[in-house]
Length: 184
Image (cartoon, rainbow, N blue to C red; front, top):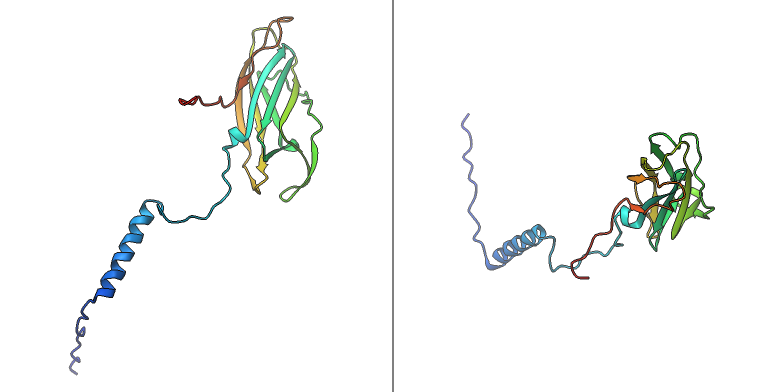
């Protein structure tokens, strides 16, 4: 049996409207590659990086006490029960940090919980610290923005030098030092 002869048909002539449509598609493709420059975008909340929203610093008050400070930016909060601290060498082992009271908050993610806004100062007693010792503080934390976005748990590490007895508190060490601006 003979195969029927098929034809692709006649080619349609491209008119002006089809050329315009192809030009528009090309223009949109170019715009997409440049992030839709010039096209309106959906506005969302502008969030700070975690290290700026929950700024961590620490200093040694004396060879037996670390002062840990979180400066929580406006519009953000830090969970009290998500704070964990470890010190190497293990001179804070078995010692509970002295946490401030905080405020009770009904959280959409974790239910009724205690949070910190603004500065939160925590004291961590040390056992067997000697003047001049360097200790490495590891701090775990988690917080959210009032805009309804929670950050993943954060781990930050600081090295603090213990001051001499009676020598006064040490200088605060920041986990993420502020960037210097060339315009200020």
